Length: 344
Image (tube, rainbow, N blue to C red; front, side):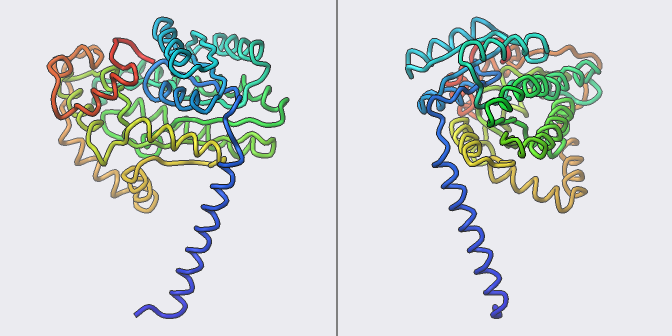
């Protein structure tokens, strides 16, 4: 039987949660993206492109960047033709500090300000540790730590001059829980998590709000562009199947909408999907259980190959043959421009 104190405690917690939800809703209603200058890295395909489309609907002024000029031009054309968006497209490799500086300078010259920075650009190496090279780790650190560091360090002075700004760093559940066969990726995301959460604490007093996003699996269509090493077919199969399971993975449109809501309410962090929230919560309480579970998972994953160079998912036989089990991911690839070779 529930005693009076327990009932009062439950009522109090419900009231606090209700008030918090109301505050978040009011905060979201207050901030709109209309005419805001939003810079999205890795926006020619996948989640970045979905974010750009949703921001175009909200009449934001968009700056999109990616390394591939052809894919960037195609994304710009659709955003302009389908959504009548105001778009500045800048070819840029965010791992190059000088290219980042030039891109930010171009944004300021064109728009005169930068209101929101979304660090989204990404790539993944899927491989057992034995087949990982030091270059794999260095590449992921460049992409997930130094790339966002360059964009933030360059954009922040302009936000300080404006008196406000918002930064969204797309991290991953891999930045909270290290997953077997994704070690370089997870190492890079852990570094981004530390950088992003620390930036949040340091910049709040200057009215610059940094939000760290921790998505679980998302159906952006990106698996066909990941780099796989080891036993290519087996590695790619488990990765793509995991990305396609409804209930475990969420579609990119829902993820993008949650990210933009988190930005509007100045969330410190936001985790996407119930499985990701549960996994992070369990890891926080009992990390040993999660690590032991990952040990068991690792036993089920493919063994390393003696020699293995990296190939992209679209080069594997599994991708070329196709499977009804991965239809949701394949449809997402078609919607989000992940159907052509290349990386974001």
